[in-house]
Amino acid sequence: MRSEGDGPISGAGALLGILRDGQARTRAELVQLTGLARSTLAQRLDALVSQQWIVPTEEAVSSGGRPAVAFTFNRSARVVLAADLGATHARIAVTDLATEVLAERAAEMPIDRGPEPTLTWLQRTFEEMLAETGHSTAEVCGIGVGLPGPVEHGSGRPVNPPIMPGWDGFPVPEWLGGRMGVPVLADNDVNIMALGEHWAARPEADHLIFVKIGTGIGCGIISDRRLHRGAQGAAGDIGHIRVASALDTVCRCGNAGCLEAVAGGAAMAARLRAQGVEAADSRDVVRLVRGGNTQAVQLIRQAGREIGDVLASIVNFFNPSVIVIGGDLSEAGEQVLAGLREVIYSRSLPLATQHLTITASELGDRAGVIGAAVMVVDHVLSPGTVDRSVAPG
Ligand SMILES: [Zn+2]
Image 1 (cartoon, helix red, strand yellow):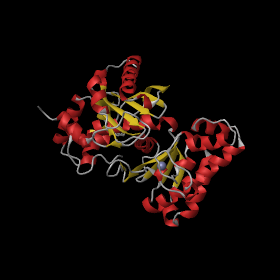
Image 2 (tube, rainbow, N blue to C red; image 1 turned 90 degrees about the vertical axis):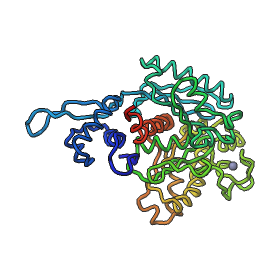
Image 3 (cartoon, rainbow, N blue to C red; image 1 turned 120 degrees about the vertical axis):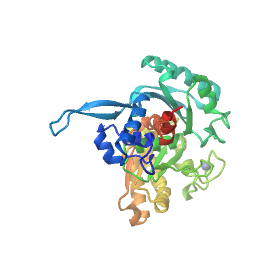
Image 4 (cartoon, protein in one colour; image 1 turned 180 degrees about the vertical axis):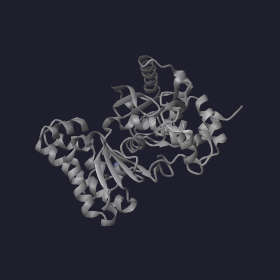
């Protein structure tokens, strides 16, 4: 399971951490798992039942005796609102506490309209979707928002986001939370994608890198099962690592030689246009690759090798067990993965690649909203928060 309940199982929150896997367990099983005295366990269970975090169910016992009461995580106790705001489009979802999507929408929403128009639209969309699913804001335990730029951890404020004019330092959690009366958490979109993919598809991986190849390139890092953000929240910004083939190309960040200036979706679309092929953005590049356009296929294979070259160093440095490739361009599938694998396996240390899996995202364009929901649920159901919510008085 998750690593939320570090330390001895003592509080109600740590007990809930065990039950979050959805499996029903009897008192006897929980005593064995936690080492708690029966009376202490009973108190903890009562507290969690009174908060509706868990529900009692009748389970037949195999020994043929009378049915024993078992307790199971109540995934419907609250709902979560999740948003993945990209440069030009947004995906919004309502999920339960197990991050199952109850309702979902995708829409064109350019982030450069600025924070207030975007968040006003987001609030209205959330309210419509809650009504659709028959829920009220009183049932919402939190809102998770992914943003396409660096976000300061703790405050949830964007920090010098290059493609988000007007958003620098904007208090997203206070603004939206104040209007909806619900706690709001915000993070960088690639970070939440890493969280979502780890939670839903790769829970066994302790060290995972999620690489988003879209208009730009970035990665989210799960280290020892936790998100690694770095000192300023800038960890994983691999799109601006210098590569030899890009030295005479100026990047949108102002430097020359950045990876994304040759291997990002925007750069590839520009190169195709220079060759007389019509391509406006990364989605057009994927469409062309799927249609078998020779120039697009050549470009994306080369991009895979360029990205692989940077990742080969990262593999040596970080030694992940899984690299997940997501973002628009991952939909080109093997065309991008082949070159990437070839370079990583040939350039990284054998010890680091011995058990390394390189795979396309399983969640696809849902990784962001699932991850935003995971971020909220991990926060709301963290042992400390649960312990405080069930504390008497
Ligand atoms: Zn750059």
